Length: 111
Length: 118
Picture (cartoon, rainbow over the protein chains, first blue to last red):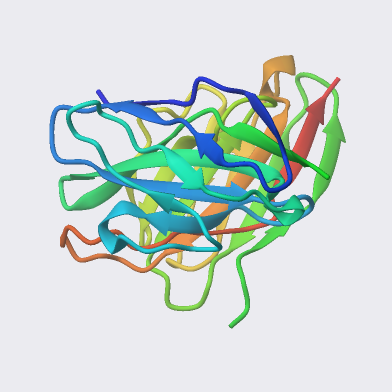
């Protein structure tokens, strides 16, 4: 079975400080990992995926298979980064995508 | 393009009553998902459709929950009878079918329906 763990329910940082949102997973196969974000009064939306190796809104995430982690990082937090962040894992099951979400971390950026 | 539509946005019912939610996915998206998100938790997949067929309903409480996508477009999720623990936000999402390839297709989410069971 696959599992996604986000150990922090709430993370508060000051504007300009570095941010690291933790995500650990358990899955015996080759996972695909993602970060979704939900800003206040907006829909859940994809932020980034590990296979793209891209930086979105200054955020990056590296898949560490040895530590089974996919932490989300940003060097300098902005107030507009305040939101709920969900780590998700997907695997191919019978030709279909099976997605598991973590419990989410609320990021609060203090001005 | 228009996003995923859901209705109603809010619903308050008493336990043992019935309720139905509606979802219209993005045009052309073959895959449709229903999630339950209880306060403080992440979205939990209830059921996944590929066109009008069910591909995963392993976490759907089938004694009270049902869902259909008869024409492979819009979908309804029903709860009958509702329990207090069904209070949650019900999210609908859609994606293009990835055709068995490893590349993940982004899920697009609707605004959700907030259900309160009293």
